[in-house]
Amino acid sequence: MIKTDPDPDPGPTIQQGHYVRDPTATNKRSNNVPSIVVPLPEDGRARADTMKMEVLGTLGVLANVLEWLGTPSQHGEGYPGSSLAAGLGDTVVLALYDYEAMNAGDLSFQKGEKMTVLEKSGEWWQARSLVTGCEGFIPSNYVAQANSLETEEWFFKDVSRKDAERQLLGPGNMIGSFMIRDSETTKGSYSLSVRDADELRGGAVKHYKIRTLDSGGFYISARNSFNTLQELVQHYKGQSDGLCQKLTYPCRVPKPQKPWEKDAWEIPRESLSLERKLGAGQFGEVWMATYNKHTKVAVKTMKPGSMSVEAFLEEANLMKTLQHDKLVKLHAVVTREEPIFIITEFMEKGSLLDFLKSDEGNKLPLPKLIDFSAQIAEGMAFIEKRNYIHRDLRAANILVSAVLVCKIADFGLARVIEDTEYTAREGAKFPIKWTAPEAINYGSFTIKSDVWSFGILLTEIVTYGRIPYPGMSSMEVIRALERGYRMPRTDNCPEELYDVMMRCWKIKPEDRPTFEYIQSVLEDFFTATESQYQQQP
Image: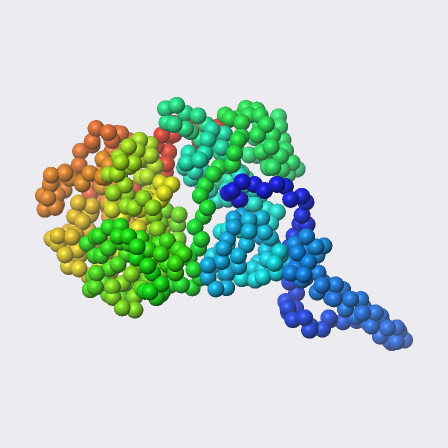
């Protein structure tokens, strides 16, 4: 989807077909065109030779024509064979944003430019511009298949109902802002999400199922059907016709981050310019830095001796396979010599703990605090599904983006720390107040001990960063837990949220809920009694 102001209608384009390549064909221009022999009786052998020569001649001319058509640099995108130049079976994509090449081998392009994808590999694809004829690597999240729904600025692929609400209620969107997205519940169907007015909560989002006709059309209300989603959008832009609001502008979202540089895992220390110290922790410092003079990153510098390089690399290679919108992306490492550097995506608002104490954070209303909790539960549900554990879940290890997206950081890092002050329960650095009793007493860390920690994290969020068990030392907390003590509910904590906390603090790990369950409770915290979708108008 193009997330900037749409260009004027460029007019009709040739629909790119999808064909299977001949597995025996190559891209070499010197290839001989295969001959075609038509079986004939013996007495027709002379005529067969003549027919063979005629077919060869015809195919040779056709090959020359296709070779001429396949040279976009000579003709530009508008020449008659521009679509054929993509090659039979090649994918043609449309640029959703401008991209300026930053690395050797990258391909620069402008929004609206068409390209042929030559090879798909990870987040960087090799492509050829149908405008310039140049080849290079392109970020795959900056393009969409030409003539597909994804090129429409109002279409959001793979966005959940909850994320649709977060985005539509975000900065820059107004009443009537909308998106069409894939249905979560019905494969191949769509949903329309529209921002509505809500005096109590500052805004609300209504959702409508888009139903399909057997003939291929679409409708929200049975009295109005449309051949395409584009026609449906145009209709409801002109009138609300039963919707909560008339559609105004497609949902505005920030330009996506470019994927990390291809194959840049172990990077040179000198490629990083440390610019501003963001904080200091028990095992090192966190800096805002620039990589190769063009990409802003966060760098965690680990104190020498705090971990084994071999153990860290083993864990880091696993950590980088955990890719999710609610997990901080691990980009690269510097491990050839100490101190070890861990390079991650940069999160503008810093840690959730610091943000909650800031002038901006300590004014957030309860619904936003619940939303933060739901986002963290979503990330932990992914970790749970992947049979991984965090071991150190607390507000200090959650980072916040410019648009208030919460992401989990430092997952798995606690396992490779070798500092006895951290690994021993009586150590000064051990996070006793966040740790489940079985992990304190027996070193038994599981996803269920993470659930306990999440309950403590909820108290940090609802109290805007207050230290858990205020006024109690770590040893006092241990003794109190053994007696069955649990933190009491604060005045601003809803009973329903406190119930979630108490479930997280069940003494038997198996009695604690899953993160998947916690996510569902928190995402529907204010809408549990409302219909998820509006009735058709």
